Image (cartoon, rainbow, N blue to C red; front, side):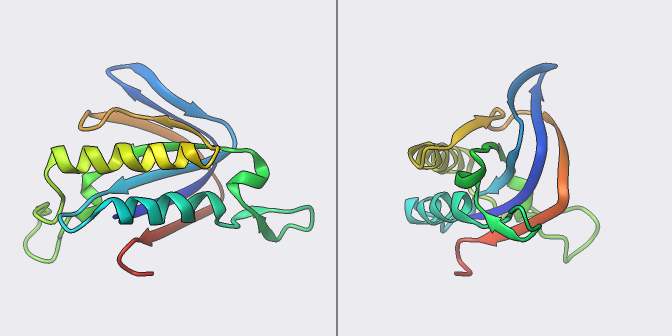
Length: 148
């Protein structure tokens, strides 16, 4: 699984002009699933992300986690994270998992993060979504469950 994580002051997602999720301070996680991913990959990211110390303390150092700041997580499924642009000009998405498997692992990731005591908001799997966020910092990280 691959996750692009952005620290946000606020963020929201709309599907068909209806807001389906919103957070104030917290993290926006764009999550992609590939063929070899299993529940263990979801567990790894669901445990790692809420504990990342990427929020500033009173001295301006990144010492606080999502838990510490009592922030929310906006989770967005994003198969395009497995887009391959090495050949030609149109991305190839053959490395992205089939929708049924990807959705199952995406939902499992969200459940596990909720199990960590984090408020999770989501978009709609497979839908065209409009995501808005104010990136704080900016802080953006990429995690891959295969590169531990």
